[in-house]
Amino acid sequence: MEKTKRQKHYLKWLLPLLILLFAALAAVMVAKSRRPPAKEVRDNPGILVETLTLEARSQRARIHATGTVRAQQQISLVAEVTGTLVWVSPRFAGGGFFRQGEKLLEIDPRDYALAVERAQADLARAQASLQTEEEQAVLAKREWQQLQLPDKGQPSPLVLRQPQLQSAQATLVAARAGLQQAQLNLERTQIWAPFNGRLHDKKVDLGEYVRSGNVLGGFAGTDRAEILVPLPVEDLEWLVIPRAGSRASGSAVTVSAQLGDKNKSWQGQIVRSLGEVDPVSRMATMVVTVDDPYHLKASEAKDSALLSGLFVQLEIQGKELGSVIEIPRAALRQGDVVWLAAADDQLEIRPVKILRRQQQSLLIESGLAPGERLVLTNISAAAPGLKLRPRSQEPRP
Image (tube, rainbow, N blue to C red; front, side):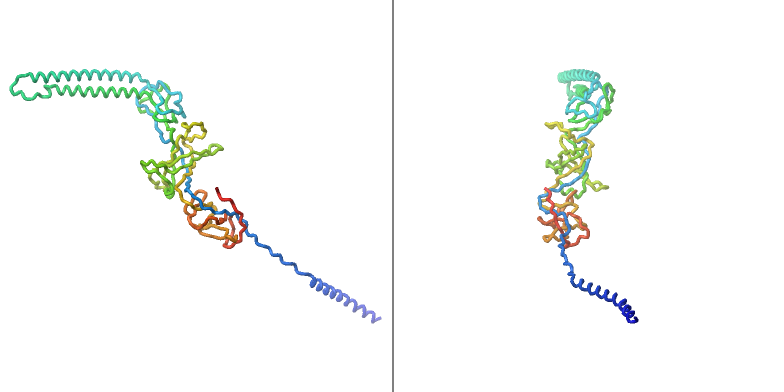
């Protein structure tokens, strides 16, 4: 009985140990039979970037600026005589266009016509008086010669009536000048367009009494518009600026403006410089002109008049620079360096020398060669040798 209890006691402790032992042996066998997973080697494809294949092209310097349009000729119409306006052109109103020599206004001419008649009468009297004095001078000289006086000497000017003759001659000159003045005043009663132009400010109307010196209206030329363009002094070396008295053509200019939902453009050119630098802004001012801004001479009607007062953008075509490489401004990195995709698609960082900075692009003097691939994409933590996956972008036409 006691033996049986002892056997049960041994089995109670031995059985769990055997189970643990078999479990451990099974785990070891499973671990030995399992194969380690194969290591997967992945290729680094590189960072995807946009690239631009560089080309060397014949380039011209382009300068961008802004300005405001104004008429090249602009005057105030002023009355030169006094009187009542008796005739006004039907188109004498703001915005009215006139050709050179076209009649604008007329002041009552009657008083001035009478003045002409009086001046003509004064001239006739002066001519008659001079003729009389000339005859009397001849008679006085003849009488002196007929006198039989011993040692009579030479006659005095008064004897020969020379002072009277000179006075008559002066009166004739004054009478002629008076007639010319009267005729001129009569002509001034009619006001004519001094050049092809447009009335932009009407001051008077029919029946109004005006005095000499009164402003009748503002008149601006329509043959040519001009734009004063301030430019940095360093830009002047790239421009063709005609010298004073020269007939050479200046740099061509494209003038553009946003009119509603459309962008309109006109062609002009630099004609001169104001010849000085503003001491505050350090800018030099060029004068750009555009012929026939209102298309009055054009064979076909156009709706894109270059209006005075319009704010415009200008692109000035500067001097030829030869064959150079042009890159986008955004491709230049801090420190005047660029990123390139080398032949092995690794990142190369290279310094460049800039010939000219333009509004949207840079002209490179040295540091780049045609056929190289310029990286356009921004890369964080860029470092030489970084693996790239270039995607080409077509070069600009």
